[in-house]
Image 1: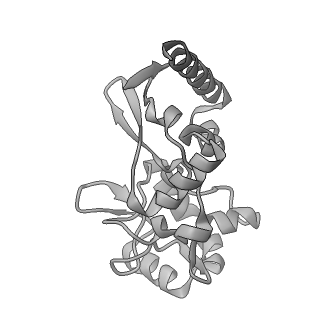
Image 2: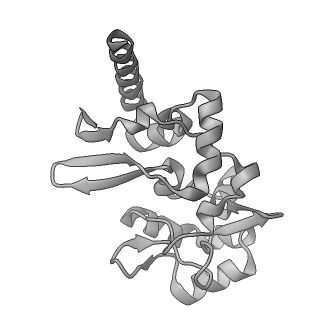
Length: 195
C-alpha cells in the first residue's frame, strides 16, 4: 500500500516493517555485494570529483586505483550513475575494519576532512527512491544480506523509517520526517481500531 505525503508516494512498508543495521552480523555486505555501485545523484558525482583529493588518505589503494582508472562516478550497464567498483566486487569507496566493510567517504566526513557524508542512496538504505514526472516514490528494498537488520529491528521494534531518520531529514527535511511519524501513528491507530 502507498500513501501520499507532499510530493512523495511512500510505501507503508517503511512504517510497518522493521530494520536496524547490524554490522556485527552482516559486516557491511551492502558495500560489497551487488550488480553495480551505489546510485548517485548528478550533484553527488560532482561533489565526489571535488573532494577526491581529501578522500584519498581514507581509501584503500585498490579503491584509489579503481577511481583513477574509472573516475569518481560511472554509468553502469543499466544507464544509471553509480560509484565505481574494485573489479566486480566492492564499492571503490569501501574500506575494511577487519571483516567489516565501511564507507571511506563517511570516515573522511567523520574526521572533518570533507563536507559530504556519503551518497544519499547509501544513507537512506534500505529505502530506495525513484523520481517520476511530478512525484518521487520511496520504497522498502528487501535484500537477503540485510536479514540480520530485519531481525534486530524487529527485536527493538524499530520501523524502517525510524532507523534512517538522519538520512530522511538530510534528504527531505525534519518536517517530512514528522509527517512520516504522524502517518505511522495513524496507521497504528487504524490497526488498533480494526482489532
